[in-house]
Length: 229
Ligand code: IYR
Image (cartoon, rainbow, N blue to C red; front, side, top):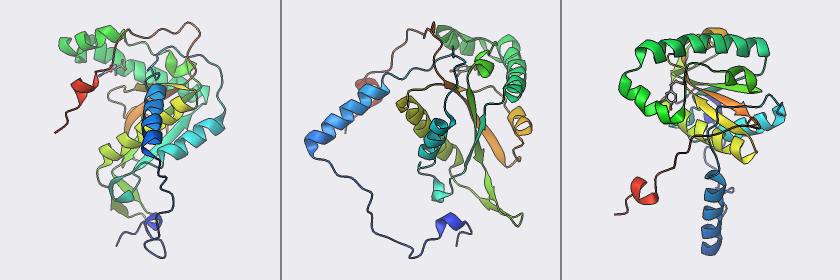
Protein backbone atom coordinates (compact mmCIF):
# COMPACT_ATOMS: atom_id res chain seq x y z
CA UNK A 1 0.00 0.00 0.00
CA UNK A 2 1.17 3.53 -0.77
CA UNK A 3 2.82 5.33 2.14
CA UNK A 4 1.71 8.69 0.85
CA UNK A 5 -0.76 10.24 3.30
CA UNK A 6 -2.78 12.05 0.63
CA UNK A 7 -3.64 8.67 -0.94
CA UNK A 8 -5.32 7.34 2.22
CA UNK A 9 -8.90 8.41 2.84
CA UNK A 10 -11.40 6.87 5.18
CA UNK A 11 -13.64 5.48 3.81
CA UNK A 12 -11.44 4.55 0.81
CA UNK A 13 -14.15 5.42 -1.75
CA UNK A 14 -16.72 8.23 -1.56
CA UNK A 15 -19.56 9.23 -3.92
CA UNK A 16 -18.65 11.52 -6.80
CA UNK A 17 -20.29 14.80 -5.84
CA UNK A 18 -18.26 17.32 -7.83
CA UNK A 19 -19.25 16.28 -11.37
CA UNK A 20 -21.29 18.95 -13.10
CA UNK A 21 -23.56 17.89 -16.00
CA UNK A 22 -24.72 20.29 -18.72
CA UNK A 23 -27.37 19.99 -21.39
CA UNK A 24 -26.07 19.36 -24.92
CA UNK A 25 -26.66 22.98 -26.03
CA UNK A 26 -24.85 24.19 -22.90
CA UNK A 27 -21.98 21.78 -23.61
CA UNK A 28 -21.62 23.12 -27.15
CA UNK A 29 -21.76 26.70 -25.91
CA UNK A 30 -19.21 26.09 -23.13
CA UNK A 31 -16.83 24.16 -25.40
CA UNK A 32 -16.81 26.99 -27.95
CA UNK A 33 -16.56 29.70 -25.28
CA UNK A 34 -13.52 28.01 -23.72
CA UNK A 35 -11.89 27.67 -27.12
CA UNK A 36 -12.55 31.34 -27.88
CA UNK A 37 -10.87 32.25 -24.62
CA UNK A 38 -7.91 29.87 -24.98
CA UNK A 39 -7.20 30.78 -28.60
CA UNK A 40 -6.42 34.34 -27.44
CA UNK A 41 -3.46 32.99 -25.42
CA UNK A 42 -0.12 33.89 -26.96
CA UNK A 43 3.32 33.10 -25.69
CA UNK A 44 5.06 36.43 -25.19
CA UNK A 45 8.71 37.42 -24.69
CA UNK A 46 8.33 41.11 -23.78
CA UNK A 47 7.08 41.52 -20.23
CA UNK A 48 6.10 44.60 -18.25
CA UNK A 49 7.64 44.92 -14.79
CA UNK A 50 4.18 45.72 -13.35
CA UNK A 51 3.61 43.68 -10.22
CA UNK A 52 1.05 40.89 -9.97
CA UNK A 53 -0.84 40.03 -6.75
CA UNK A 54 0.68 36.86 -5.26
CA UNK A 55 -2.83 35.65 -4.45
CA UNK A 56 -3.51 35.24 -8.19
CA UNK A 57 -0.39 33.12 -8.59
CA UNK A 58 -1.36 31.03 -5.55
CA UNK A 59 -4.88 30.35 -6.88
CA UNK A 60 -3.46 29.36 -10.29
CA UNK A 61 -0.99 26.99 -8.60
CA UNK A 62 -3.92 25.40 -6.75
CA UNK A 63 -5.51 24.85 -10.18
CA UNK A 64 -2.28 23.26 -11.44
CA UNK A 65 -2.34 21.00 -8.40
CA UNK A 66 -5.74 19.61 -9.44
CA UNK A 67 -4.13 17.93 -12.46
CA UNK A 68 -4.31 14.14 -12.78
CA UNK A 69 -1.01 12.36 -12.09
CA UNK A 70 0.48 8.86 -12.06
CA UNK A 71 -0.98 7.03 -9.03
CA UNK A 72 -2.05 10.48 -7.76
CA UNK A 73 1.52 11.03 -6.51
CA UNK A 74 1.41 14.67 -7.71
CA UNK A 75 5.13 14.55 -8.54
CA UNK A 76 5.67 18.26 -9.00
CA UNK A 77 7.06 21.27 -7.21
CA UNK A 78 6.57 24.90 -8.21
CA UNK A 79 9.33 27.24 -7.02
CA UNK A 80 7.90 30.77 -7.30
CA UNK A 81 10.54 33.46 -7.66
CA UNK A 82 9.87 37.19 -7.26
CA UNK A 83 13.11 38.25 -5.49
CA UNK A 84 15.04 40.45 -7.97
CA UNK A 85 18.40 39.10 -6.76
CA UNK A 86 17.37 35.49 -7.48
CA UNK A 87 15.84 36.49 -10.83
CA UNK A 88 19.15 38.12 -11.73
CA UNK A 89 21.09 34.96 -10.86
CA UNK A 90 18.67 32.86 -12.96
CA UNK A 91 19.09 35.25 -15.88
CA UNK A 92 22.88 35.15 -15.67
CA UNK A 93 22.96 31.31 -15.56
CA UNK A 94 20.30 30.92 -18.26
CA UNK A 95 22.08 33.29 -20.62
CA UNK A 96 25.34 31.34 -20.21
CA UNK A 97 23.53 28.17 -21.35
CA UNK A 98 21.64 29.99 -24.08
CA UNK A 99 24.79 31.57 -25.54
CA UNK A 100 26.33 28.12 -25.67
CA UNK A 101 23.14 26.82 -27.33
CA UNK A 102 22.84 29.53 -29.98
CA UNK A 103 26.58 29.84 -30.70
CA UNK A 104 27.65 26.19 -30.55
CA UNK A 105 25.25 23.44 -29.44
CA UNK A 106 22.20 24.01 -31.62
CA UNK A 107 22.27 22.28 -35.00
CA UNK A 108 21.43 24.57 -37.95
CA UNK A 109 18.09 22.79 -38.48
CA UNK A 110 17.03 23.72 -34.92
CA UNK A 111 18.14 27.34 -35.37
CA UNK A 112 16.17 27.48 -38.63
CA UNK A 113 13.08 26.18 -36.81
CA UNK A 114 13.42 28.92 -34.19
CA UNK A 115 14.03 31.76 -36.68
CA UNK A 116 10.29 32.63 -37.09
CA UNK A 117 10.05 33.07 -33.29
CA UNK A 118 12.91 35.58 -33.19
CA UNK A 119 14.52 34.05 -30.09
CA UNK A 120 18.14 34.59 -29.14
CA UNK A 121 20.46 34.22 -26.16
CA UNK A 122 19.31 37.43 -24.45
CA UNK A 123 16.69 36.80 -21.80
CA UNK A 124 15.73 40.19 -20.27
CA UNK A 125 12.27 38.83 -19.44
CA UNK A 126 13.87 36.75 -16.68
CA UNK A 127 14.36 40.01 -14.79
CA UNK A 128 11.50 42.12 -16.19
CA UNK A 129 8.64 39.75 -15.36
CA UNK A 130 7.30 39.89 -11.79
CA UNK A 131 7.22 36.10 -11.35
CA UNK A 132 9.27 33.15 -12.56
CA UNK A 133 7.84 29.74 -11.71
CA UNK A 134 10.42 26.95 -11.92
CA UNK A 135 8.52 23.70 -12.42
CA UNK A 136 10.23 20.59 -11.09
CA UNK A 137 9.27 16.94 -11.55
CA UNK A 138 9.98 14.62 -8.63
CA UNK A 139 11.45 11.25 -9.64
CA UNK A 140 10.52 10.11 -6.15
CA UNK A 141 8.69 11.60 -3.19
CA UNK A 142 11.03 11.99 -0.22
CA UNK A 143 9.49 10.88 3.09
CA UNK A 144 10.24 12.47 6.45
CA UNK A 145 12.16 9.33 7.49
CA UNK A 146 14.54 9.86 4.55
CA UNK A 147 13.16 7.02 2.39
CA UNK A 148 11.92 7.63 -1.14
CA UNK A 149 8.64 6.51 -2.77
CA UNK A 150 8.93 6.04 -6.52
CA UNK A 151 6.80 8.23 -8.78
CA UNK A 152 5.28 7.20 -12.12
CA UNK A 153 4.69 9.00 -15.41
CA UNK A 154 6.50 12.04 -14.08
CA UNK A 155 6.98 13.92 -17.40
CA UNK A 156 3.35 13.31 -18.37
CA UNK A 157 2.05 14.40 -14.96
CA UNK A 158 4.21 17.52 -14.80
CA UNK A 159 3.26 18.49 -18.36
CA UNK A 160 -0.45 18.16 -17.63
CA UNK A 161 -0.12 20.28 -14.47
CA UNK A 162 1.86 22.86 -16.43
CA UNK A 163 -0.91 23.01 -19.04
CA UNK A 164 -3.46 23.59 -16.29
CA UNK A 165 -1.23 26.33 -14.85
CA UNK A 166 -0.79 28.12 -18.19
CA UNK A 167 -4.56 27.98 -18.80
CA UNK A 168 -5.30 29.24 -15.27
CA UNK A 169 -2.86 32.16 -15.61
CA UNK A 170 -4.31 33.06 -19.01
CA UNK A 171 -7.82 32.89 -17.56
CA UNK A 172 -6.73 35.27 -14.78
CA UNK A 173 -5.48 37.81 -17.32
CA UNK A 174 -1.76 37.04 -17.21
CA UNK A 175 0.63 36.15 -19.99
CA UNK A 176 3.31 33.47 -19.92
CA UNK A 177 6.41 32.21 -21.65
CA UNK A 178 7.31 28.52 -21.37
CA UNK A 179 11.05 29.00 -21.22
CA UNK A 180 13.38 26.00 -21.38
CA UNK A 181 17.02 26.94 -20.90
CA UNK A 182 18.88 23.75 -21.61
CA UNK A 183 20.40 22.26 -19.55
CA UNK A 184 18.75 23.92 -16.53
CA UNK A 185 20.26 21.99 -13.66
CA UNK A 186 21.45 25.35 -12.29
CA UNK A 187 17.89 25.85 -11.03
CA UNK A 188 18.38 23.07 -8.44
CA UNK A 189 21.28 24.85 -6.79
CA UNK A 190 19.87 28.39 -7.11
CA UNK A 191 16.46 27.37 -5.73
CA UNK A 192 17.72 24.78 -3.20
CA UNK A 193 15.91 21.81 -4.69
CA UNK A 194 17.05 18.26 -3.91
CA UNK A 195 18.49 16.25 -6.79
CA UNK A 196 15.49 13.86 -6.84
CA UNK A 197 13.83 16.80 -8.62
CA UNK A 198 14.39 17.67 -12.26
CA UNK A 199 13.55 21.13 -13.64
CA UNK A 200 11.19 20.85 -16.63
CA UNK A 201 10.14 24.37 -17.44
CA UNK A 202 10.83 27.89 -16.27
CA UNK A 203 7.47 29.63 -16.63
CA UNK A 204 7.74 33.40 -16.99
CA UNK A 205 4.58 35.15 -15.75
CA UNK A 206 3.35 38.73 -15.90
CA UNK A 207 1.69 41.35 -18.07
CA UNK A 208 2.74 42.01 -21.66
CA UNK A 209 4.91 45.07 -22.16
CA UNK A 210 2.89 47.89 -23.75
CA UNK A 211 4.84 47.54 -27.01
CA UNK A 212 4.77 43.75 -26.97
CA UNK A 213 4.75 42.04 -30.35
CA UNK A 214 4.28 38.35 -31.11
CA UNK A 215 5.36 36.27 -34.08
CA UNK A 216 2.77 36.06 -36.86
CA UNK A 217 2.24 32.32 -36.60
CA UNK A 218 -0.89 30.15 -36.62
CA UNK A 219 -2.14 27.05 -34.89
CA UNK A 220 -2.95 23.96 -36.98
CA UNK A 221 -6.53 23.45 -38.16
CA UNK A 222 -8.65 20.68 -36.63
CA UNK A 223 -8.10 18.46 -39.69
CA UNK A 224 -4.34 18.84 -39.20
CA UNK A 225 -4.36 17.74 -35.56
CA UNK A 226 -7.18 15.21 -35.30
CA UNK A 227 -8.68 12.19 -37.03
CA UNK A 228 -12.09 10.70 -36.36
CA UNK A 229 -12.42 6.95 -36.83
N1 IYR B 1 15.86 27.31 -25.08
C1 IYR B 1 16.17 28.26 -26.11
C2 IYR B 1 15.81 27.78 -27.47
C3 IYR B 1 14.38 27.54 -27.76
C4 IYR B 1 13.99 26.29 -28.13
C5 IYR B 1 12.70 26.04 -28.52
I1 IYR B 1 12.20 24.19 -29.18
C6 IYR B 1 11.75 27.08 -28.51
O1 IYR B 1 10.43 26.84 -28.89
C7 IYR B 1 12.13 28.35 -28.15
C8 IYR B 1 13.46 28.58 -27.77
C9 IYR B 1 15.54 29.63 -25.80
O2 IYR B 1 14.76 29.72 -24.85
O3 IYR B 1 15.84 30.60 -26.48
